[in-house]
Image 1 (cartoon, rainbow, N blue to C red):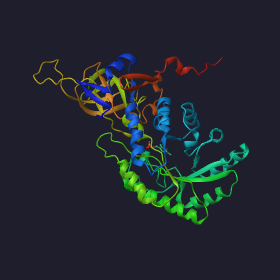
Image 2: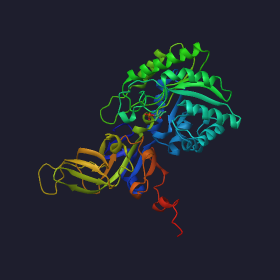
Image 3: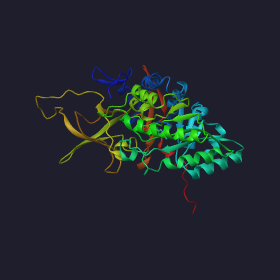
Image 4: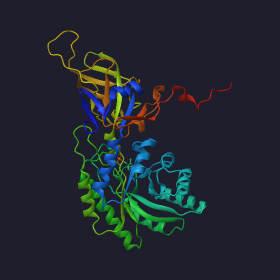
Length: 426
Ligand SMILES: *Cc1c(COP(=O)(O)O)cnc(C)c1O
């Protein structure tokens, strides 16, 4: 988690030039803290590495949909990959360009299709024959022509966690490879549809290049078959899934990714798109939390903190590992005394009434009650997956830019939790 943007200075963790205890004092905990420079650097890295190969990087909104982050990426020229009408509305509210927005997902509703057709998105990534007919009818009813790309399921093993693997033929995602050609013919013959592209997305947190290469080659072979059928495409979309380092993973170098794309798609004139989510935001955020109580059991030591699975669900959901750092480093006492601080092995757990409610397990740390902890690499699928379980208001989010702090989402108020609820009249 120690990058240029998250550093220890005089024993205290900083985000850019701001000390994390100052954020806790001003905004309370739990709190998500993002570095604007880290977000910008991540977008710049994509631009630099993929320059001349990939024409459009569509940020996958579901990784972190805060308007400030979407707006920053829109200003940096990124497009967006959305999976719902809600995400479309977020992109538009943040000033994103609908003409750079692709719409993925297996269950688009008619209302969502209508909103996307009205906004004028770049394309629908269609995932089934059934969806195609509903899209065709919806576009015809509105007197519009829907731009269509099929999400192909290339049946490759992305070698990642089963819950975040999406490109195997047993997954619910995409059109089976063998059925794609017939669907393209059908779409090409439908007046309310315009075939524009092809896409894939084989999984998430992928750290090996070979599954991408294998899937890209399969995609290309399909594009060549389509050409033989007289169907020309404007773009090919490689999807997202590029992994990051949480613990000791070796992420794919974007320059290697670009080189692979150059090799596979040499001589092709279609525009290339990618849809990264995690890789753009994960390392740019930490979850700041305070220790409420320390509790030592027979076999385990628990640090009970004010963040929980409601703020960061990944450990409970996928046994994901996030780095945990004490915000202010305590000296380890070696010469004894009952009050001496010593390193112990801690499970970091939240207040939620579930045994699965942990943020980290068996971490050697020197802790005291009241101390602050920073859960690292929490910018992706953290706030986005947060919930109100146990009537917990959602955390606030702040953005650091140099020595400036901007609150980009206020802590939720408890009374807002039941604002939409009604008591029976009799
Ligand atoms: C989730 C998703 C992405 C982004 O995945 P990351 O692993 O965050 O890069 C891209 N495309 C589609 C269709 C997705 O569902």
